[in-house]
Image (tube, rainbow, N blue to C red; front, top):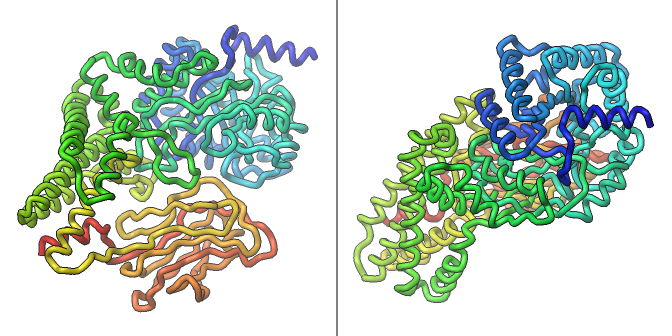
Length: 629
């Protein structure tokens, strides 16, 4: 009892007296990708102070001294930066919590590892930190008793023995869902003063009252919610600027948002999260989202343009988590009307054409205005979103071209010159997208462009409509020219009979056709498999899988097929998490799958699962090439 009272006094001293529903509310820098850097964090800490947030948890996956090099001291420069951040955090009444990620590099029962852990925590305490977290997410085994032991020892042998420390925060290995034996054991064994983080029913999901009630029973305490919104490390082509919704009024010990690597752009969502944390019962999501633009951008024209841009850039697109958001809400009825007209007759009414032109012009003007103004008004924001603004601009120019080609075709005119110009415009848009990738890759860990996706905009409502009109018109033009129906490549998809991967998402990125990376471990039962299919016209010349653990490599095989029925084992070169082998184009492989041939479940982390392919073009690109011949 005495320890609980002391912990409560320490918490009040550290975080302040709480009248709010949620005592700890703020941000966790916990995503995969380019860390924000000191300037970004300073900006965010000031923003948090202005909006009544009071905890910042430092845990970027790609800071090696937080994760893979956790035993080593930070270099002098980084320690100076931490001191700067601690000063600004204190001035804004924010608890700056430093997290250590032990992953699989901490050995059970190792005196040396415990000594190294306490030494590292001691260095951070001496630097001024008074709040600490320990992470076990995404790496290592789900050993609840071991993780409880580590948490309890940090609490009793380090935190309890030092002045002014806040209660420990833990991110467990099984940090989503409920009812898992790991969660129940951790709840029983871990000291009740330790906060346990949790992401919801899924890794990316809404936070519902029924799920919180169940995990509270498992943890034997209210969860400390780590909400994976607006993080975009699993949907890197998208920038997420939509409103905050999907949160029930729940009892939790804390609530932090995991934002995007686009720090300034994340403030739209964070503004809403701050308002929700302060008063969940009376939170008005739409009103707060509208209000955020005038609060975040002093220039009224910039605020208006950002609101237009944000409305059409808020949905993640198809992804392995199955978590989606609304997008282009005000334009959705018009898009539906246009789709219905075009699907019914291949035609659009004059009224619909005019409305679409007005919509495209509004979005185009907003994008062009922001591209011109942000470098002067808000360079920090402009640098982050420039690629998406360029993509939005060219998407709207291509949309206008689609309508122009549609009108010319229906007037009986020759559209070859218009299609040639469209091809040039699409090529220029592609060049700008590659520039964006290179720019961000240069500022990202390992300078690895594979991690940086091409910006994609307005994908939920507008892009499908634009593609429908353009592809439909070009197909009609192709038939008028050749007398034949056009047959395009089809069948690029992922498939799975594994319960843990119900709907794998695939993408084409240059010559690589494969899975969108799944950053969390999943369990594949004996006999279960997952795979990828490419279209008949595509040629495959290499296969490569990275499965997170050589145990997964040992437990399974890669099998190839030409028709999805008859499968042949691929004798891959295996090393570490890798399974790979060059393929002969002449063999015509169109399917690849991983199958667990062992007698046990195996943990798989799909960092990569892909074919290298040749002769790839979208249906629209194939049509354009045919029509400009």
